[in-house]
Length: 247
Figure 1: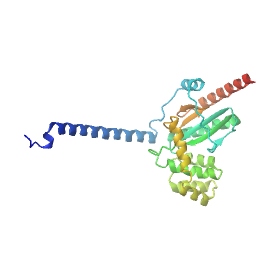
Figure 2 (figure 1 turned 180 degrees about the horizontal axis):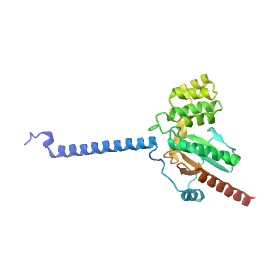
Figure 3 (figure 1 turned 135 degrees about the horizontal axis):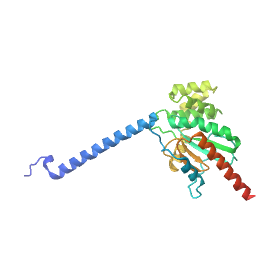
Figure 4 (figure 1 turned 60 degrees about the horizontal axis):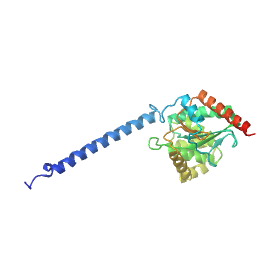
């Protein structure tokens, strides 16, 4: 009875079956993640989840809601530093939802001019967007030459073509010094800044792009233009009333 083969021993058989079940579950989980990632990448599903306008307004008006100071001294901005409303966006150049949000926020900032400070921060989701981090590096090299926003627009307008050769070609198209740009990009000069942005986003609960911090309150997803305008106008009016009370 001491010559039983390993698979005939009760203890070994149990652990063999258990290991097989764990392996099967791991494979199924991996397949599920791959399918989910493909759906996100193709735009079939949205990350983050959708929101309603009423919940958005409630989040902004809730005094007990967590607020974060996300404005930095070195990220690209539009508007005035002392604007009554601040908007910080965490975005990914290869994300289809960030692409949807891009013309909306640009039109919003144009509409409200000096009443809104808008800052762009990086959150490349390289796990599902293979070119996202290179695009961010390239945008920072454009920023080094004072042309972040033209390059930012060029990337979103050509989201399906963000290979390295294309990133360098876009630099030439907007009039950047090509040698300086190439040296900057090839050196990975701004990798630490990108890591800082991503770490700040993760620390404050950013799960996907676009994620907004409107006056410090985190809002997820693509906000329709008409909703964005109403929200900003309401925030401006609230700040004006608060200022009047303090005088």
